[in-house]
Image (cartoon, rainbow, N blue to C red; front, side, top):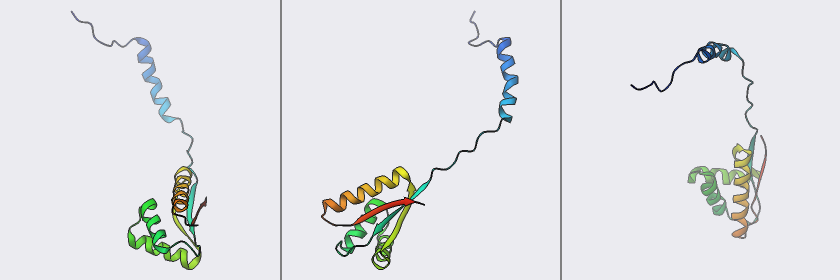
Length: 114
C-alpha cells in the first residue's frame, strides 16, 4: 500500500485561513526609475554621414529618422536622440563617444535627467 505524497495536517489548514488576510494588505507603490535624455551636440568637424551612421548603429533608427535628427543637430546645435534608463543612457553615451574617438571625430554625446 502506498502512502499519499502529501497529507494536510491541522497546522496546514490553519495557514489557509490566513491567506485571505494577506490579500487585503496594501503594497507600497514602486516608483518608476528616473529617465535620462541622450543628446548629440553639433560641431564643425564631424561629417553629417558619420552622425547618421551613429544614429542608425547605436539608436536603431532607420536612415530617414537618422537623417532628420542629424539635420536638427546641425541646425539647432543639439538634439535629443532618445530617453532611456540611467544604465542604458550611460552605455549609449559611452559607445558613441568611443566610436567617434576611434574614428577621430570630436562628436559630443551627453545625457541629462529627463
